[in-house]
Length: 415
Image (cartoon, rainbow, N blue to C red; front, side, top):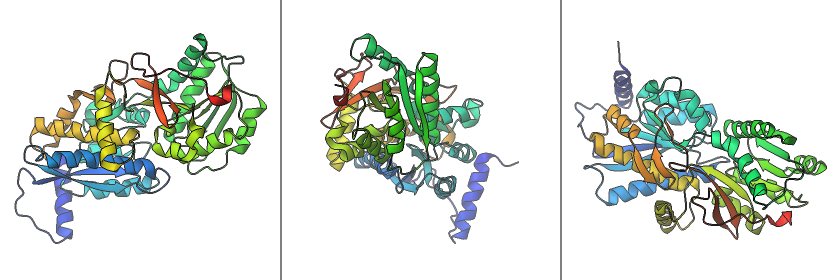
C-alpha cells in the first residue's frame, strides 16, 4: 500500500514526465525552497490578497538578504484564488501542490470554508492559515492527528460571537454610552466568515436580553446600495448597528449611506475598517468607527514587535499594513523557525512537528497553538481580541484595558 508521501512523490514523477523532464537524482537540500501562497489577487478581496503577497514577500526578501536559512534561499509562488469559489481555489491548490519544490504553503484565507485543509493533509504539506478559524476548528478538532499539517495564526472565533455584546455593555456601565432600548440591528453577508460571526452575535445578544430589530443577509460579493436595509434600521432606531460584511468596499458604502441620515446608534463594523482601503474610501466619515480583530497586530508599547513589523512594511511598500501584511510576514517567519529546527525542508513531518511547537512573541501577541484544534491560543496572555476606534485615519486600540493606547470617544453622529 502506498503511503501519502509515496503518492505525492509518484504524482511529482508523473508531472515531471509529462513535461519531458527526467531527474536521475535529487539533492537532500534544495538551493531554492519555494513557498506557496494562496491569495485573492483578483476579485472583491484583492486588497487583502495584495497584502498577503507583500507580507510574505517581505519576510522572504529579508531572509534571502541575510543569506537564507541553513543554506537555503526562498522564492514565493502565488496561486490566485480569485473570487474564492471552490473551482478557483482547487485550481490554485493543485497547481502549487504539483510543484515538487514547494515545501510550505500559507494563506490569510483562501476558500472561506477552508476545504483545502484536506488537500494539504493528503499531500502532507505544511500549511498555515488565518481567518475563518471556526471552519478550521470544525475540520481539525474531530481528528487533530490527521491534520498535523495545518496550523492557524487566528484563535477561536468564539470571542467574535460574544465580546461585542460585552464591550457595548461595559461602555454603558462606565457611563460612556446609554442603552435606552437594548435594541440591535445586525446585517451580514452570505459567506462563511460573516455569517458565522453574525449568527454567534445574534445568539449572544438574545441571551443578554436584547431585541434584534433588523436581521438582514445580503448576497456575497459587491454591494453598492444599502439604502433599503438602512430604511428598516431607521424605522425602529436601535442602540447598536452592526455589519459583519468583511469586504472593505461594501463596508465603506454601508457607512457612507448610513451617514446620509444617521441614527444615534453605536456603529460597529466587522474587520473591514482594519483594511487601509476602508479609510481611503470613507475619509473623514470613518471618524469614530469601531471594529475588532482576532489575530490582528497588537499595536501597543507592551508589544513592540507589532510596531517593528508595521514599520518595516511601510518602509518597504510606502503604505500602512492592514491585518494581513503583518500577519503573513509573521507566518513565513514561523516557518523559518520550524525549518531551523527540522533542518531539511523536504522532511515535511519534521517541519509540521516544529510548527506545532511554536511559542513566540509575534506582532499579534504570544503565539502558541492549541493541540486540540491547531488554532492559536486566545486570551490576554496569548492573542487577545482587540477593539479599535478610528480617528483622523488613525486606529486607536481601546480594549482590552491591559493593552489600550486610548479610550473610547462618542461617535460624531451619536451627539
